[in-house]
Length: 318
Ligand code: RIB
Image 1 (cartoon, rainbow, N blue to C red):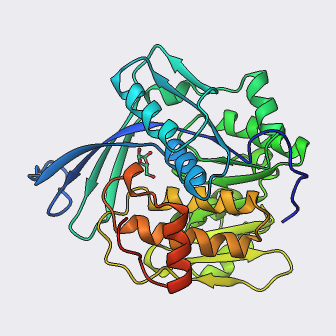
Image 2 (image 1 turned 60 degrees about the vertical axis):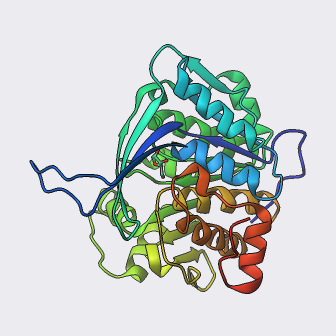
């Protein structure tokens, strides 16, 4: 992937949400109208933007900035501490007069989750002139869809104009205008999200991965399609499709594993790695995150990721 000459700015700029997660462990998903009793509840720092920024910053000291918003409340303080402790620059995070975003996360005994996000301050994420400069001065911009899509669209346009690599993690699923997609260099999307995009843009519902990837490559040059326990598939113009497997793991909690993947992918791309190389590091990091509870606290260090890549095994917790 073409690498910009090192600039004075940050290697990675993340545009995205910040939430406090209320995570409850349930024996099974409740049916509509039914109550289930949770064995446990915990509050964790989270939100796709904050998680991905922390994952990028922890991936070997990559200078990372976050463009986000939180409230002037205790949850905002918790998130500020979480991202700052990882070395993420928070000067472009707005403190706004509405509550910090929140997510209600149900986790089942297999570690799978169901998440409801209360948008709160994330609806107020916006880009100032200074933020646009931050984007232009960076090597990689990474965004997701828990903040307003027009903001993501402006970030992508600013990145494109400056020759900055723009990575879009298309989660949660949303309608994505062609004006946004034309500025995306790398699209990271789940299999389900990929089907939605193919339906939105081509009115087609391919059931096999090869047709899905062919469809998405009409929209963006590089696609990384994540397939849960089956790992991911990397599809790039003019190259063979590559399958990257997850490491052998007993998942404890899937929350934050996808964000770890995206943050590490962006960090490695900002170091000049190919999409395939970056995906292998991202997969090792996400595999480790699967073995730990919570979103923010599950994000591994660069050393743990290096060990996992070298041995093909999950390293013992530090
Ligand atoms: O991807 C996991 C994240 O999604 C959680 O931390 C939650 O806050 C939601 O944004």
